[in-house]
Length: 338
Image 1 (spheres, rainbow, N blue to C red):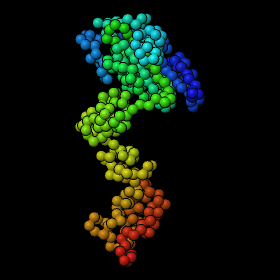
Image 2 (cartoon, one colour):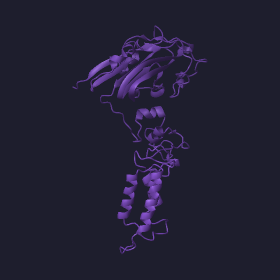
Image 3 (cartoon, rainbow, N blue to C red):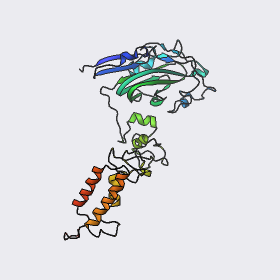
């Protein structure tokens, strides 16, 4: 049994949620400390309510939500679905009961709470009938109309204070939902295709969890998500910065620059510019150096330019010239040609 210091966090006691223990288990759950907004009704109602349950909802966070107020909390046993998933939080709603409202019982509700944490967390969400959770406006959890206890749990990373927003669509009958955000103390998430996205994350990106390159463009789904391109569009390939120097590969003439090196507008460091100007094999592809001295002279001239441009220090430039002098570049196979 591990020694976890568990803290249950509410919006009204946010500061108390920041534990000084390295082993603290921080938990945020839906309850009356969560802010709710007045219900919104679809107009017209959906002929098939399940069509509202898509990864990108028709009513978003920036809709005309009115009258923020404390959510109504009904406890861990208010809705029959809570028992199917372990009663992990209190069931909440935007009004004082959990009976559905609106045309054919259809409605949208929104909730929000501040959360604070560092590192990896586990999110669970459940609503009647489908729901979305966002952290600072980014979708991190989605419950579809065909949910099961195994597909409503997601990995979440926190780095400081964030805004968690919970969106629910109710298709009729009973209303409301619940969420739980907790420090990850051992939950692992599969990545079936090894593309860098966990299977739950591939629900959010609408990619194939069994195909590492869903759009077949030669880049893995994880690479595309990291680069900001669409992993479902073969015509939207990522533009990457392989060496992390701030110049994208499409415009980078030196895409293997050493970390931290000063670069020019072409993405090349002083060392790379000298190497490009003075190839050991010769001044051109088909022409070798006349002798070793010609190669050393090239390096000395090229390093002076890079020093003048601020891409090399005097010491770095001198080191390049010294290394050139000690090299075999331009020397004949018999050792002559100096």
